[in-house]
Length: 107
Length: 120
Image (tube, rainbow over the protein chains, first blue to last red):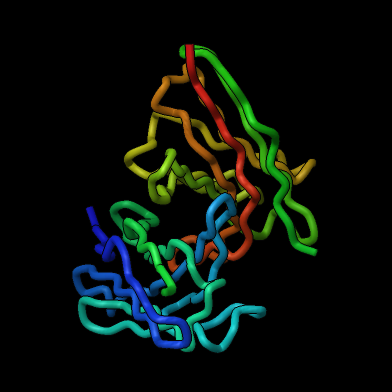
């Protein structure tokens, strides 16, 4: 089965850039999607197909995907960006797969 | 406005059956896949399965195959997730989510979740 690996936590200073990685075997050949989940709320799609932002998502959120690593980048991090972030792909063996999630802390 | 409205919280005993629902509105319900995602207390997201209400084509994650049943009633734009015999380990938050497609699709609209508590 296909597995996605994310760091448990990432910290970023207010106003700086946060990068959250998602590792998987040849993940660069797959479409990667990213979700933000704040405490007590449902997940929200923030990036789809590697680097596309849904309407309403700030330009500060961006994504890239190459080789064995996909990355979600949050520029000019704000306190309101504190959340859990999950990457997700589709794999023929397991259908949809989520990474384990990364807790972003804005200091 | 596109939205998914889920049924309310449930408290059940082990061995009981349960069916929770997810009603779509604001879009063509039969044209998008709808899936279910589990989140156990303090844990991450787990994809359970998906259904296409247009023809009831259903797919399951290997982890959930045989453990739950996903169905839909297109006449009332509602998808369901059901258990025939609940276990304490089914205690979790369950989200429904609209999928943009079968394979490369992403989940662009989410319900607010249904809390299921299974306890004797």
